[in-house]
Image (cartoon, rainbow, N blue to C red):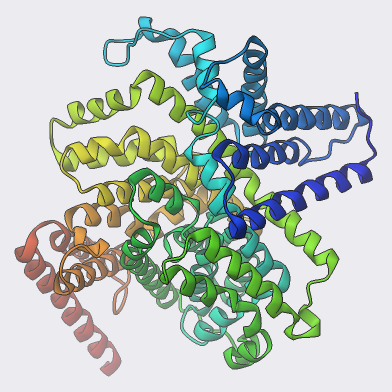
Length: 616
């Protein structure tokens, strides 16, 4: 056993994090290495960091963790050290590599349990057992069965398992974006974004909640993960909301929904967008542009929800002393944000995500030296690398594990069978198939990062929608949204649990409230399938009309769930508002006319009641 002092282990982890980040930045500029080499370096360091992430109290446990971390590093780095020899055998596996593969699978399962959580580890284990029990499965899921050697080879040798597309995305696109986000966080850029959001909205009704929405939008453009958004912007916005009069669970729910939506916001959108580009063959830039209108609708509706909540409970704006000056923030901190327009500009010019990220990192790093107070010292470089290492851990481990699931799906063909099951159960009804697909996505996504959840549903259930005639991009956006919603959907809602720690409220109560406040996120996927114009498909007129309809539907639903329009809504008015919203969504131009008439009628009645009350 290795009995390393805690300080020495900290140095080893810091060194691993710096190599991980340095390798990511290096390959972003000078070019990606061959797949197995790129992923091998990335995952070997990730496994070491995963097993040493939480220093144990006893020397024995710490030594065991270090030993597992070093073993995981060695088993993965074996591919890097003997790359040419392995590739020359064209997938043929030696007896030694068989045992190396088993060791890697076991260690990756344990790393998944520790870093991502037991649900993901159990799911992967179920898939790993599946190739051995195929002959005894029901006809719909049966297959001829596979040997242990064939399964281990699929997982460990070549690019069909652990070293698949998901891990490639983590080792290239995601790591550079995470480093950029870490620079913003450690230099004060993230706080500047939050100050801009608070300064812009603080003097409005429900200002703190609106600041949470705007701040999470801005931060979500570069962090791309719900939990990271909550832990970054939520530490400021949640206490501010509570002090302003929002109930604790409401403050946590608003932040959870806002932070979850950050994964929708271009130009970055998190790892899922990069994986979607690889899976569909559609360019990342087209995916980012397609995401713009649904993301804007999502946030417009969420702003409407918090506005109605503020009116309903008479929550006052922030005082002048509590509201940061936007102008002053720009004067003092705008240099810290220069990396964001750099990223957007380089992406718009057609450069790759990695190359664009490299220049965003470079500009953000250099710009920090504009003022002495924001200089990036060697200690801060280390903190940036450590922060990036911690942020990439769950994504990278989940991607490696998801690669094993995809490897099993490819080996057994079960993906086509699950798609056939959805089509069979739906009886060919597209609407019923959409409901089944969303339910499957929510279940598969429980407790998982959105990237891992999207990988699973894109592989297992998206083909069913395509087979039913849904355009490829719309089908993948549908399952992406559905998988993303697992972050706020009970019983396992990662964003809600993160917000609960800050709000000091029940995570299940926050998740339940977030599911209500995020009602637009549950409706938007259906709107995308019914009106692909929301993804920018079609003429400008069609796109504008679809966007306007989506906003009206979303605001109508926001009024229904909050129970407020011009004044509090009674039960009949809430039901009518919901009916009007669904009519506009589902019934074509006749539904638009009917829904508009209902909303106008409710508005007139409430306006007249307000006038009578004021004159009384």
